[in-house]
Image 1 (cartoon, rainbow, N blue to C red):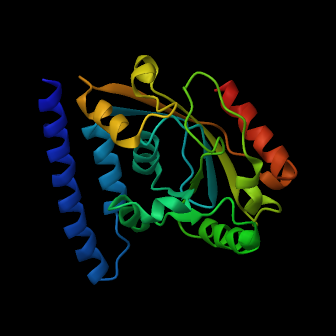
Image 2: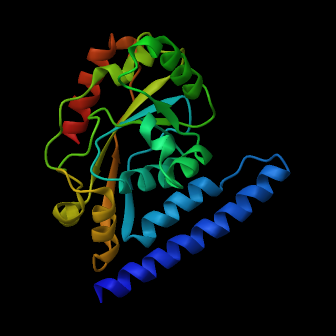
Length: 237
């Protein structure tokens, strides 16, 4: 049965992808903003078993979403709920299919170890923040176990030091509930093995996205203070 669930979900994912690409291409031909990347990611979240429960009010633009990170399912959930773009490590751009699909959702790729181009990357992030959709950052820099928050990497918030005018930070706490132990991607588990485990899992699960009250980063201080304020609100959630 686990194998059947895997193939059924994989087939549905491919079907949703094909439909979204056709519709996205049609919208691009008439030069209209395409809703289909957001639809695709939200639909994929449901296909893998996630049922999003939204608590709070997500910001629609001029916002940096700061979220904890449990697995790649977080990306599907956040994008489906808000239409957000993401900041991702540069290596993802070269991943087969996934890298190309990420560009359709306006992903901003950053090379964390490229100290010579830090200024250019900060400028690119500021430009991304100015777009008519939110941009999401996972300040832990990796996935955690869902029970405790890992240390935040304040360098990922450098574009907010100082922040562009009018931008707000909205912390989000994601919780998979009783399914956390089954789905959190921790340790050295290969990505393919984790994906297989998710697709084979029986049933659905509730994924709660708690959108905390946003705050003005300019009123908080530098990037370390912003990271600290976001972390405190996420812990309170």
